[in-house]
Image 1 (cartoon, rainbow, N blue to C red):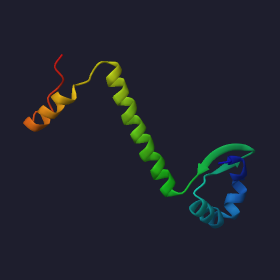
Image 2 (cartoon, one colour):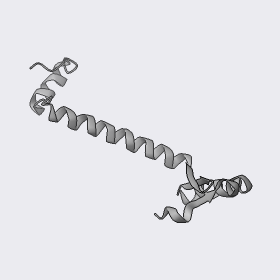
Image 3 (cartoon, rainbow, N blue to C red):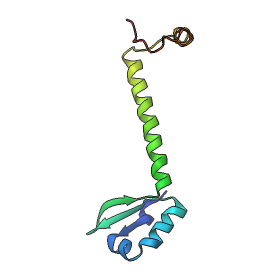
Image 4 (cartoon, helix red, strand yellow):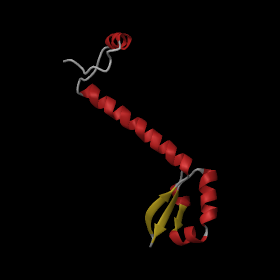
Length: 95
């Protein structure tokens, strides 16, 4: 994706808001809004924003999991399965 083709000054957005909104909804590509020649904001459709937020949440969960592995806060699969079957999985790790 080339963002250089999606750069618009704020004056363009003001004059063509409906067109810009239709374009980002159809193309699902963000538009970079500039003010005084400097990038100030990114405009994107709601579906893309929600997908991005969901992806970031998953990445955060993965990062937290990796941090737990690094700290040695892990359990053997067999122990987890036994805990789940016994209904005691919510107990803290015992070290």
